[in-house]
Image 1 (cartoon, rainbow, N blue to C red):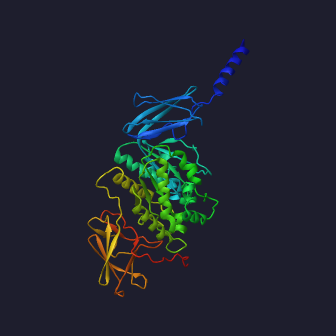
Image 2: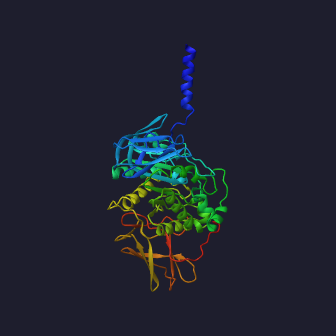
Image 3: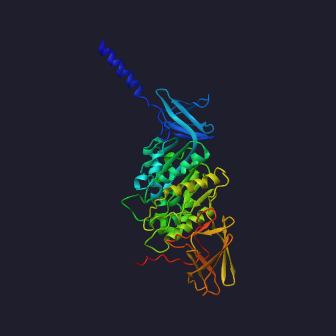
Length: 471
């Protein structure tokens, strides 16, 4: 009799395990945050034609799906305004999954290279912030470094609740960005981090976008291999971005560019194409805010300035994007990883609060070059987003240079007049061009009255020296 019972148990187990059970990608797990007031996609895998029910606890609606010929299913569900805690029950023919501790709020993706990847463990001195990092309304989804030759459908990650320990191992820029959104919007915030130090933007861009563009393809071929990160187009996109492109997000923040200084001439085109490809995959014009790379003692002259110029042009030409300037947030010019990540994250948050969420009274745009006017032996520079006044942090403005038609730039004197500035050099009687902060190391001291640094610029389009720096 015991043998018959044992055989019966084995038979039952086999009858269940011989069929596929419903399962979900990692992005749908306990502690997750879903985008509020939206129609969001939920998907997974099952037996072909298996009926799947999806029941969120925030309303009485039950949604249904069925496995297709690829053993996949998906459905769209409506989310309410920010709140929680909720559950989502996913039930198939043979199993049931209950996703616990679900919040509804604002979800953002944070991506890029090392300055976005950087955590407290990298030597950041945020002891007080770590101690006070317990916040059940902030959730992290950290995608580990991985690469693939084709787009993947899942990642090895899970949602975790913000705690001191979790915060220490998460992107510092992303954390401080999310913390400020949480404080100012008073809603839960979900942060998806996908960053890898050293990676050029090509590896975050779908392969066809690069390969089908001769200019971008030729630039990508110039990127040198590294033992520390992939260098081929799409490798990190395939493994770290593609698996979550179906997950509804509010927008993306990006900190990258240092590894593209050698191909700065094509970076505007590359970043524009990458942003467009991401928006196509998410099927919406995502707000996309990025960090201008900081001053650093590069080995080649002016490559940092040219890359920053490309970033500036991208922000000016691509709709629903924005750039924060960080020329004043450098603690060591010889360290490519400035440690002032709290300020960077909060500047990004201010941009999102004002631009994406319509918050008023938030200073978020750095003054940027508008136009120039020659006035006898001087040039007057006007700015966008300068407010009523410009101000100096110091007695004399630094990093201004002026040239005549001989293209020889000399240090300039300056005078602030409201939200414009006069620039001149006594030896140049007929000036034609001005450059400001246009070098690798420049940390100018000109700011808006709200305290945001004026963005670097040049009024000319002359060739720029990128020869090795003389030691």
